[in-house]
Amino acid sequence: MADAIITDVVQDVSRNLTASNVMVEKFDIYEDDGTTREHISSRMKYHQCKADSREGGLDKPQVDGYVERKWSLSGGDDLKELVSTVVESTNVKAIYVSRDCRPYTYDVIEQLLQGLYTNYTIMSAVFCIFSLWNTMIDAMDKFVVMLCHNIGLKHFIFDLPSTIEGRKFHSGFGNALRMNHTLEHLQLYFPSNSVELDLEELVQPLFVDENGHQANSTLTTLCVMGLSAMSSVGATFARMLQKFFSIKHLDLTISLTSESDVQTLIRSLVENHSIETLDLFGCDGVKGSVFPTIIDVLLVNFTLKNIILCHTPLRREGKHLAIKQQVRRNGMYKVLHLKELEMAKPTFARVIFCSSPYDGMS
Image 1 (spheres, rainbow, N blue to C red):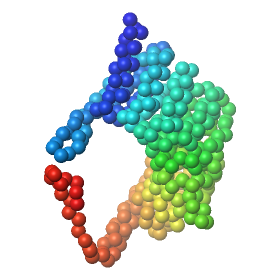
Image 2 (cartoon, rainbow, N blue to C red):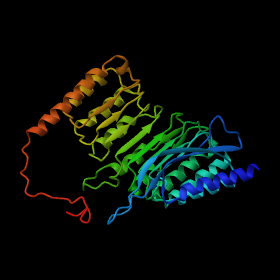
Image 3 (cartoon, rainbow, N blue to C red):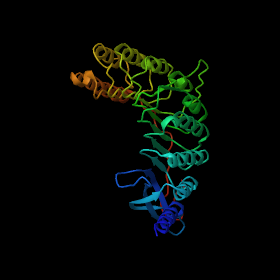
């Protein structure tokens, strides 16, 4: 009877995944307190569309409202069948895999990564892996290969809160950025300090060379978090910031412990005109002489819109308020400067017809 219920669940989910009038905003595979060791949960947030037929016009989908449903599945072939449907579907926009991973879930992750090689409709993927024992470095290599081949992802998060046996060095994400030209947001989070990333290799594709060429110009948000055990993190990113690249949001949460390293990073912003948000959440190196350094940089950098200093020594001292005030002044100066610029006189106008039979024409 249980197998029949599981089969019904797979068929039910598959119908939604393949229906022409359903858009799946997010599909989750996860474990919660209500699941047994033999089962895993899946959840889907979606909305149904209805045709808006008008004479002379095309059918347009209208959102009825989001629906969230949850199912419990076994970790066997039924889950693999469901995952196969997910990666082959053209109406899934995001996937999320979370919680403690067992051997069968490792197979599912590989299946998802293989599917993401060619899937161009899934735009966001989040993998939060709590444990894969000593196979994690091998798994990271597979994530890198997927990013090299993927042609649709814009948002990718890989969290590894578990501890790997020993300290492992890993490179390859830079090569992925060199080959991937759709990714806009990349987040790598290793709070256990078990993984030492090759940061030089990671940022190299983001450099603008002497010929003005940049191997990757699509990435606008880079989050490299939890690298507090690594040295010279700030210096590495400082060299990147001095190369006038395309990153607008840089997140180094819990990654900078040295005051001098933070200073090096901040000073690199003097001539940078791309970074809008710098997140230094939980960085113990944000202290002492870093405060006047930030103020000095803000006097010449009007691109930076936000510096996040939560859970840092400067925040605890209340000095973030002066920094926030200076950022606000910069914004006001920029607006006033734009108002003073001379505007060109319009030379033509465009009229768009909105009613049938000429709707959409100009």
